[in-house]
Length: 365
Ligand SMILES: [Zn+2]
Figure (tube, rainbow, N blue to C red):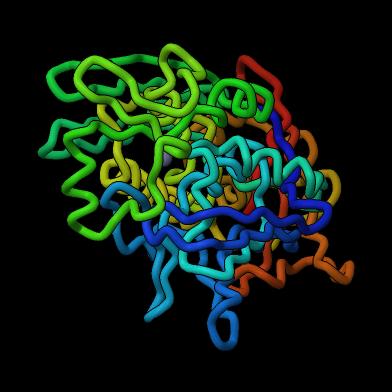
């Protein structure tokens, strides 16, 4: 797995459009943010401009779209802009809105990818938080959705979209890199089955919906302003939504997501499990001061420093050892000021030897 640094935007850029569910005109502005900030939504139309973390603990509704909320402050339909930030490799950003929902645009994430391109991308001086999946994680719902996360060297999504009566059942599997995301996933538009439209309208949803921002499936035919962008556009849009919901875990993953009949409810349930597993993994790393320079450590010392799990359990001998503190914004070494638990945080670079291999291991503690 490649170790890459966190990324943010170089400068701010805005986009205006209609929101899907309320039908109001809204401006979204993407802005740069510091290391370990994550992604936050800011409602600039409300007093004191409150922010909401794009984190799973703030998910309030998952019907048709993902809604974040904290107190009285809500942001609806967050998944397409979050998907674009995830897919394009943006770790830290502010998403400013002068309304309660980002614009739906053409129903895809392509306009947000273009917005990110206008902002530009900048590498930051800290390692990206990537959770390497070691053990499978499963989520199954009563409605027949099945989400599985299994180990994989990169980040991959395989997905099956199952339509009513098996109509437009599609399958797509792809590795996710910014290049693949931009070309193969971001342009895929939202779709809706005709029979589902009226109940949504009765609930006061999709007031801004039109054939310009969604593909409507009626029977075996397609109704939309422009022809399908991909023959399997619907399953690609499902992958787009999965990426938007998964980033709410607060980390990226090296793993393979296998999704059968995904939706915002099963997606966010998987994200909840992932977030819990990630927190458990971080808690396993023992608190200990890391020695610097070439190591003189006995077995007890080694066990105190390295996590008690594979691949560290295979280590016979430490050849060299270096703890690299997180550089803070003012160059203040040793502490990560934005870490919520206030604990110090280091990148550890260990050269180790086991009976069969010699490795260089980097990890964060
Ligand atoms: Zn969507």
